[in-house]
Amino acid sequence: MTITRRQLLILLPAAAVAWDYILAGTPEASPNYDMADHWWAMLIDTTKCIGCGSCVRGCQFENKVPDGYYRTWVERYHIADWEMEFPQVDSPNGGKSGFPPAKEAGGKNFFVPKLCNHCADSPCTQVCPVGATFVSPDGVVLVDQKYCLGCRYCVQACPYGCRFINPQTNTANKCTLCYHRITKGLTTACCEVCPTGTRQLANLKDPKDPIHEFLRTHSVQVLKPQMATRSKCFYYGLDGAVR
Amino acid sequence: MKMFKHAGHLFRLAAVFLVGLIAFLTLRTFLVPRSFGRYGHYRADAITEIAALPVNYAGHQVCEGCHGDIQDVKSKGSHQGVACESCHGPLAAHANDPASVTPAKLDTSVLCARCHQENIAKPKSFPQVKAADHSGGAACNTCHQPHTPAMNAGATQ
Image (cartoon, rainbow over all chains, first blue to last red; front, side):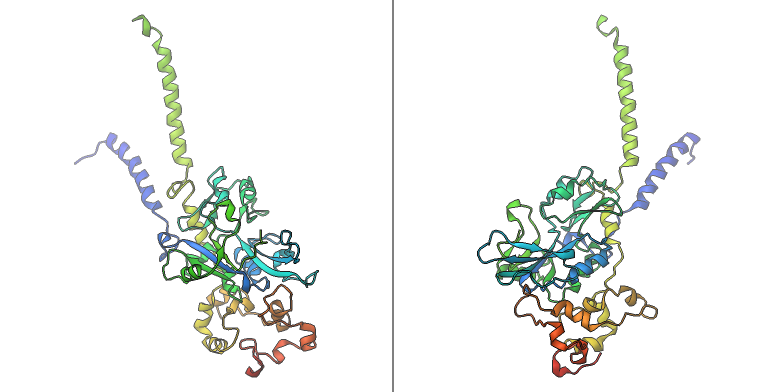
């Protein structure tokens, strides 16, 4: 079989295009990790939180979060007996260096760790005009740093205040649920360093995950359920005053 | 066929549109990343890029691989649930290259107070002290061994 010059001129570019597709392939997040087997969530037992700020420090170091910005933070609530509806909340430096003694004695006092709730129906991803933020197939809300324009729409849309604009990159930034760790079989940095086991990473698609037993047998709540975000941060022992 | 007398105008216009359409489709092929739309209205490769970020906290399982002796001591005390890097800090660099990266020595008077300094908002069952009154300025590890903090365990590093 002979190939004429005309045929060759048609075949070569076609082969070049095909080869490009072959090289691109399908990238794998991690060799032994299958997104279809995971649906990530977090369990937060507020009755165990001691406000030490280990999670905040751990997150900042692991994810190189700039000073003064927080992907996770700890709030301290003070509720006077007669003012259930008006809790006093403080979070000095995001709780990173612990908490000073309370200003007011008495009442009800407790800590609440906060982070991205990784909502299954997340308001933040719905408003992105360029498709830079999304819920991954394994249930983690992520930001594509190369696509983000820094328009701040998502920062305003998040009902939990979990997003910020990174001043170094001018793009939206938020908790990734330590996606680079959980896809390698590790737990998140905040869960790893939490000394009391307040935070526990959970895979809702794993029937053996202890979260299923916990959710069945405990009164568990999500933040702002009225927003219908299908939040996947489940709080145990959460007081009704928490917003 | 008077009706199609000026049909040439339409054909020329259609040609302009066709050229525009081809230019648009060609540009689009080159400008839209290949992985865009694989899972949804976003670039699927972003997931891979985020998953490839470096790890800084090695995880206690890695620590225990070499420091099994410490793990044995720790598992007997009330700090058994506290991960190594909770106190010792992020040490993936040490785990990857133990010879050249040495973890810093820790100051127990700062470290223990982070968790055990008294605060009204802490759970009542959590052991808390007023650090200044409790030890009179002495370092915590004068009496408590951090890996098994009960008093009768004896105080060492």
